[in-house]
Image (cartoon, rainbow, N blue to C red):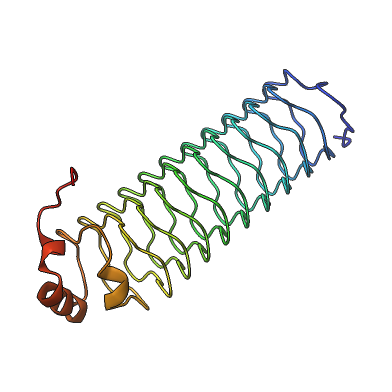
Length: 244
């Protein structure tokens, strides 16, 4: 199809529309409905997509750099290899969305809902993920360097082989998460809940980092770290008291 040049609200109700490779720079689709639309390879740089509905939409390879998706619904959307650098996704519904190999560098996802989202090999370096809900999300081999996950819920999430270098996980919940082989170089784990998490083979993970977490109850650790921490901080291995 010919790439359309679209102005304000001309596609406010385009359910299932075919907009593959469309030129939509700076388009205003606030609260628009593009459920199941095909936007593969579309150019949405700087677009206003606040509270828009992209449920089950195809945004593979789309360019959403600097776009505003605050409060948008992207449940089950396909965003493989999409460019969302510097995009605004605060309080967005991203449940089950596929972000494989997507670029979310410096994106703001504060308070967004990412349950079961697929972020394998995605780039989230320097992104803001404060208070995000990432239960059962897949972040395997993702780049989380210098990202902010303060108060994030990563319960049962998969972070196997991920790069957590200099990331902030203060008060984050890693209960039953898979962190096997992850790189923790200079990551902040202060008051993080690691109950039942798998830290086997974790790289650049130090005694000092783990000595300030909330709990290591039932946590899988390499033997050397386990022995040191058990000796110096035995309380970390006790059943945690969440009312303290």
